[in-house]
Image (cartoon, rainbow, N blue to C red):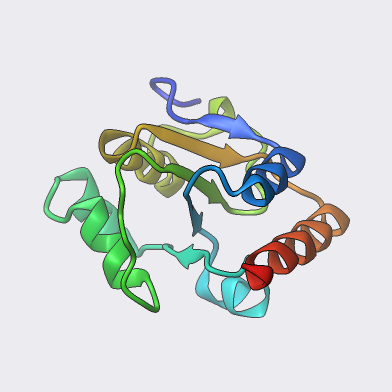
Length: 143
């Protein structure tokens, strides 16, 4: 169980609607292992899945979350602290069920200190995941 409330949940339909509306910048962070990310991910999502060492460095404030985002991105990212951030890992159902020491809890906590709106995408089953990837790819490639 998380030691404090971090982030809020967002469902797949809301994420797609948010992306389609185009009214707000959204930073997508994929916190799954690189192999899963490489197999299938939402276009423009940044993969941040850290080792125990990086988790410890984040916890001890030896690395800034904005530096980690820039380092993990395939291209320069314009970071705007007022933009929405959506984190997904394809298995977490809600913030309250996360242990206080898991990487996702640490990541969400650090993101909340730098961004005004941080959300965890509610875990999707395989069918919903495929649907989400297709919808997001359609929207993002049409921009």
